[in-house]
Image 1 (cartoon, rainbow, N blue to C red):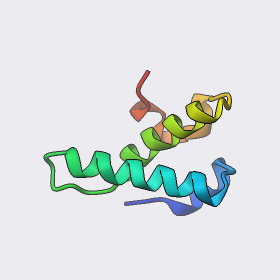
Image 2: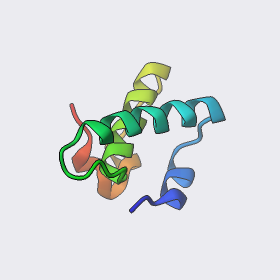
Image 3: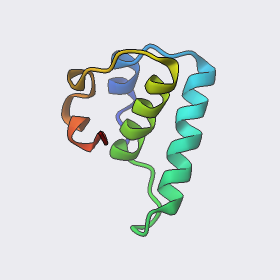
Image 4: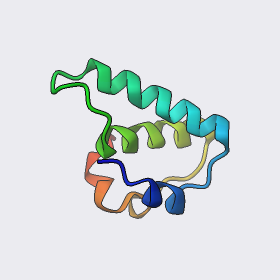
Length: 72
């Protein structure tokens, strides 16, 4: 359920930032009650949080079909 090609094409991030995103996404997935599955909505939210920390501008267009899962 993870679209790695989409993530790689849309978000230019260094390895440390990718690690942080995956770590945060895993924590969020573990806290869910639906089987603790790492999926694109969880990853999209983690990407947004990381971009916020980096002070990078965010466009919902970047997130394509996953934009609806981004928290305000």
